[in-house]
Amino acid sequence: MTVTNVTRKTVLADKCEVASTFFARFRGLQFRKELPPGHGLLITPCNSIHMFFMRFPIDALFIDSENMIVHIYEGIKPWRVSGIIKNAHCVLELPSGTVYSTGTVTGDLLDMQP
Image 1 (cartoon, one colour):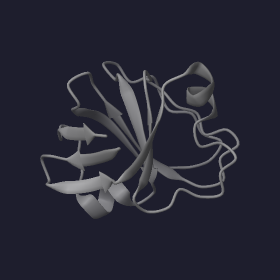
Image 2 (image 1 turned 90 degrees about the horizontal axis):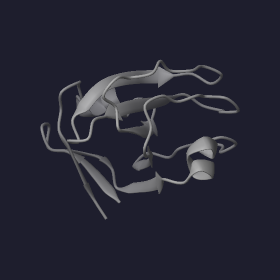
Image 3 (image 1 turned 180 degrees about the vertical axis):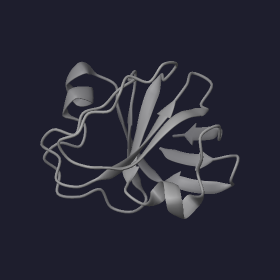
Image 4 (image 1 turned 90 degrees about the vertical axis):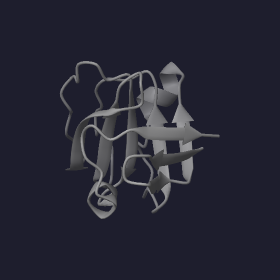
């Protein structure tokens, strides 16, 4: 799937996977060596993440049911846990630095297309 920040007119990920089963959500990006530029993982439903067994930092966008960003973690490091984000319906995990390089901020609207 492709994820676009409609507000900023930028592509956040053009190769985004979806984790929607219990096992896929729990596994997330664990044990991967990297998350290349242009890639992402959409975890749904989800309102908090863990970074156990991760090897690299990521940017995490917490998104509500209307596809608006309600919270952002930039460069969250391995072995950390996010807080529970009220109103978050899903989380988009992106390579660290994506938020900064695209100018993405809380309140931006996203579009997700297969």
